[in-house]
Image (cartoon, rainbow, N blue to C red; front, side, top):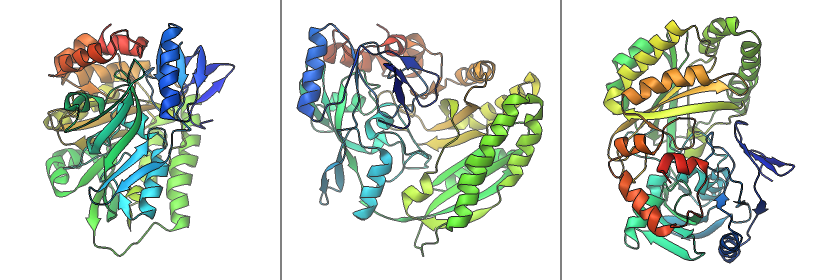
Amino acid sequence: MSSTASAKNGTWRNWGGNVASRPAREVAPASVEELSAAVRKAAEDGLTVKAVGSGHSFTSIAATDGVLIRPQLLTGIRKIDRDAMTVTVEAGTPLKRLNMALAREGLSLTNMGDIMEQTVSGATSTGTHGTGRESASIAAQIKGLELVTADGSVLTCSEKENSDVFAAARIGLGALGIVTAITFAVEPIFLLTAREEPMPLDRVLADFDELWAENEHFEFYWFPHTGSTNTKRNNRSAGPEKPVSPVAGWIEDEFLSNGVFQVAQWVGRAAPATVPAIARISSRALSARSYTDIPYKVFTSPRRVHFVEMEYAVPREALTETLREIRTMVDRSGLRISFPVEVRTAPADDITLSTASDRDSAYIAVHMFRGTPYQAYFTAAERIFIAHEGRPHWGKVHTRDAEYFSGVYPRFGEFTALRDRLDPDRRFQNAYLRRVLGS
């Protein structure tokens, strides 16, 4: 049973606690053959099918009242090909286990997000990403996919084989089939030096183009109600390795980022008037630090404080204006925002429904502590994002529909046409896909 998404009394809930559904039945196939059989059986019974990973999406993308497929038995590395520099991994493998297994083999992904609780198929199907000047999302590192389609058959795709499916299925939203294995490009393991330091928001915005251009991976967190940010620059390093000491790591990553932060969220929820003061203290609690380590130890960090999140990709050149509008909105609104706003970037890629499809992108993510009313804040932020032709993360809260997406994704029609071909009876349909892709 996954610790991140739970099923009690037949009810499935996501990690953020904001989505619940009651599947007719749950299946945990131990092989691709068993999965194919489960899809065919669902068709006989007139039920829809949805696969769920760790439940880390804040949207109802995995919710179903039909057959819920849990992939926890489809895990592990199938094959490492050192000539092609690829690894083929079962779809239910958590990113954490993939990263550790690759490191033992002296290999690594080029880029990754900051959370590694998700399964590889859940993370890629929703477009999970980190930050990068040249290196893109996890899905953009895919070299091949295996999926079970609506009639129970197994389809493989890559740039050379079924290339039209490959263009779309790397971020397939679960709409084209159930991913059973993924082949990723990997490279020899390398070291990254992280430099974390506070910086005034005005300076970050004024110098953003330079900060972006000078660093392989640049991101920052802005603390609403303050003029403060914490910046993080990750760049490749010749070494030597200089990891964060266990004590400092515990203080900064567990005590401050999870423990004290959790208490601050509880206080803020109970007494919203205290939030600006807490934000000022939080923004000063993190001091500058630098460390050098293997990629997954630099890119990822534990996230134990549960939250709800909205994230939009805007054209990179629209970032500073968009963020200034968010700041003005927060200042004028009377809202009390206790969670930092996270900003990252990605280069344009060639995946049909990638949030960075055909355009260099900047990501702005707004969060609220789980259990606090987030609607007013997210609605106001979303209004600003869509004015800049923003594209919401497929696994995070948003209100957009197929009509909107057909305007912001030039190749939206390619995806829906492929879906019509691969899943004409809508075996993989649910309410979320009906909204975002049309029926």
